[in-house]
Length: 292
Image 1 (cartoon, rainbow, N blue to C red):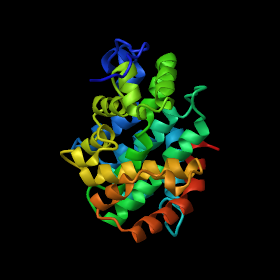
Image 2 (cartoon, rainbow, N blue to C red; image 1 turned 180 degrees about the vertical axis):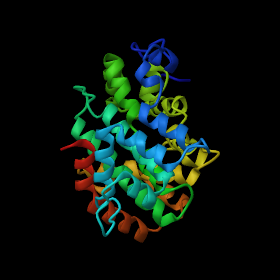
Image 3 (cartoon, rainbow, N blue to C red; image 1 turned 180 degrees about the horizontal axis):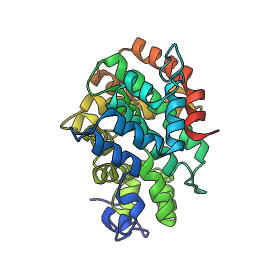
């Protein structure tokens, strides 16, 4: 018999009703949508993609700064979008545009329940670690997609805190009570968790399936039908990032993080090297993406 008391904050809510009427959340950033149309149209050329990006000076400048940063480590300065495309290719360009525009859209969200600088430090370092672990694993798809997965992983939390702050606070109190983990506390309070919400946003934005899967199966990569290794990498990276940024001891890490790394066939040596590479890139990339 279940003796768990009913949650007085349980809301009659679902993801559709939460997002209904929100035009900004219903579709991806406009420049990303236009770039996708160009890439998928065989009649379009690299010059068409270049013109779309150059039409947005902010995105163009951030892309060039990122391409010239430790994120890539090119030996010579890249001075034009055309040159950048020739080096990294259209698919990688698409993922960088998504990353920079998502940061632009959500980077100014604020909520008293969350320290935003800490939030973004965890997201960026976790994204960098996922990218580097993806490189060590040499799996498909491109490691840049794992970087985007990492950046998007906690976006659902931002939306919940902005749209239903009182319910978010209730879920947090339920979690802090110790009877439930965070996602279970969320589901008991408003019927879904922030990872499910992020996965639904990714579906609505028609993002690659690997992004949808890593979001939907966070913490349970072994249950995913596809992209298990990628989901394991992103889950482990975000857990490690939270632990690192908050200054928690290794004893605070869940034992399953080693199982996630094993699922992706990653050794302790690969993890150490990936962490060092993420550290090397972090300060510069964080400043480029968040401006501070």
